[in-house]
Length: 545
Picture 1 (cartoon, rainbow, N blue to C red):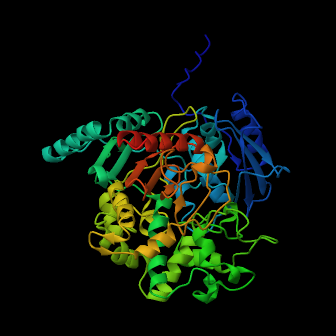
Picture 2 (picture 1 turned 180 degrees about the vertical axis):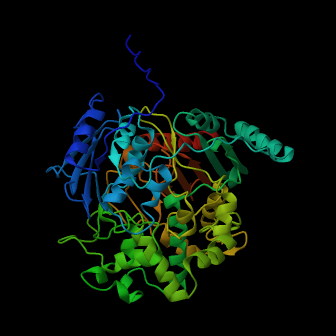
């Protein structure tokens, strides 16, 4: 009598052969893992990897094709002739973390100083979502077949229930929303239509002195299962740059800086190889000869300050590049230099200077230039997260700029946090000719000079057009794609955008001040569409159309 075959437990883990990352066998497994998902090469983005310490028998250069509409990935050894959207130079271990690490470890790659990145940084967020969500399970299969990973995929974050608020807080928030519906009905309808579609939550602040309108509300969730409140601290991203620009204006008033002088006049370590020709004016108007794709701090925006400073000290100007001939938006490096200039000529740190000389006079008591480690640890579970939305995939909460290093290391011009109402107060102060509730931040003449048109006639693919000294200016006269704040704003309106999540502006002709934060990061076109819908609705509700 034969022995009955043993039953196979379907829950048992199958022992798989593991291959070295980027070995020929691994690349074959990658082809198989994603074979079922279509990839449109004409629409997909290309990611190039250069491995600095590739083990023997593995590729030291790879191209990854990433289809943002299907989640498909295609891997190929070597580089094609097609220019990549993103180009990483990193270690073999860090490449494993980039592809297979949990979200927190992937974000921390930009904090240790060992990563170099060139290209359109904004696509990093969408790459992160594709890797995190792994809609086909192809990455999970590859992960199981990959040997020696330093940071395996971790479990999803624990779900949190809404913490109980006080009755008074809940009642005040509900009353504010109800009042906003009465005062700005069209605006609130537009905002609510975005909840669950392009953003999980929002903060809105609108003031209009001529009609005595003042609205401050929060809607939805700031992070999974955590309500957005009016006191929540969203990150302002590049809206932070406008606050820093005022510091330059103050030093200009005091005769300590001249916008037309070279940066090297204040920071001698920035001399050499053409760097000495870059002026403060070019930094403030984003017209330096360094393209945005070559921002030297792309891969190290949250690394220790000395690492970032050394990268700027050795930064090379592209051959033949001429300042003032095109828009070269500087996400990180320009404001790092401006922060160092503040310290060099005033003696105080950039963070202390802005806190004392700008935030306090404006009454921005809840805003933080940077969080202390104690503040971060106390607030970490409540800090609003950025969610990647759109493209047919579920909204993905991310850890970008929400880790301890990203929140506690100053990233000038980017990682300010505070209620969006405080950002509105900043623009109210500028609209009042520089006079804040707690003191003056600029003379009226300086406000006018900072918000006048200094960059004229230049445009780019991201909708940027006319610019002041650190401020975006309404440019709807150049076409819909360059409309900054509203089709109904005057050409004197000035403000800033914040990385496809925020916008704030003031209009001297109409008296409108508005600040909006949506914690869902959509694509550029979708973000501009929703922000203009909100801006237009504000003007309709205030009878300014």
